[in-house]
Image (cartoon, rainbow, N blue to C red; front, side, top):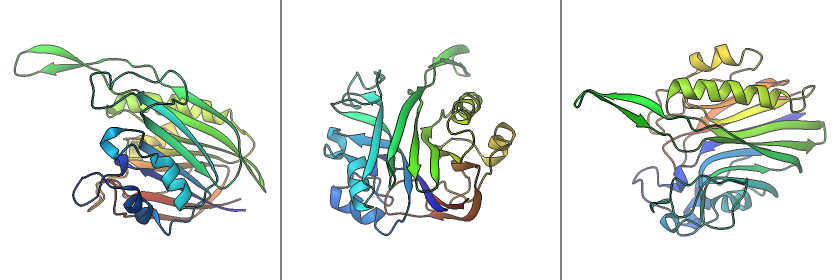
Amino acid sequence: MRFQALTLNLQRGLDASTAQPTDAAMLTSAVAGIEADVVALQEVDRGQPRSGRQDQAGIVADALNLPYRHYAATLTGDVRSRTRRSPARSGDHPGPAYGLALLSRHPILTWSVLRHPRIPVPLPSWRSGTIARWEDEPRAALAAVLGTPAGPVAVCSTHLSLFAPMAAAQLSRLIRAMDGLVPDGPGLICGDLNLDPWAVAPLARHYRLPRALTFPAAAPRRQLDHVLVRGAQVAQVNARRLRISDHRALAVTLTW
């Protein structure tokens, strides 16, 4: 089977040139022409005042004619307010939210949300000589099993910590969870891992690591965005610059 997967840190649909919010028409135009069986999105607004209360995952899904979709909120409420750090307790949320999405051409048979524990990181302040506690935003993975004509495929969308040691621990935990989904079939870990390939490789030895620079979008020097592949061959890799986001979209064509 030939299968196309794409991951994109949407950066809530900001214009790549001006870093200003975009409307639904521009978001639709920005993703036009993308062909994929599954799209993993990160930093996705839904119902947020700052992005015109758009359902950004729905807009992208409709633009790409992907009929199956699921959204997982990592933050709920207006992200600009004092409650913006309130983590979502469930996989979905009816009000304003910010989080992850999976869009699919094939039916989503099952889905689940893996939430990573929030562990404050001690950071020294050289100016004051004290230790401050830095708390990252809530991190999670939205995992699903897709029903394709060639059998089930496990896939997830994730956005890991900015703090590399924590991101590495989160990735290890995620790999263990994903290995339990469709263990005898293909598995894909998609998303902004905030880790370079050299940091990912030792943690994902049984996964293929397609390579292409993705960040920053205008002149990429690093690959923070990945599609880790288990149980399939990588036929093609492309990092595509769009009119939105400070990340390039990473597209991978697979066969099995």
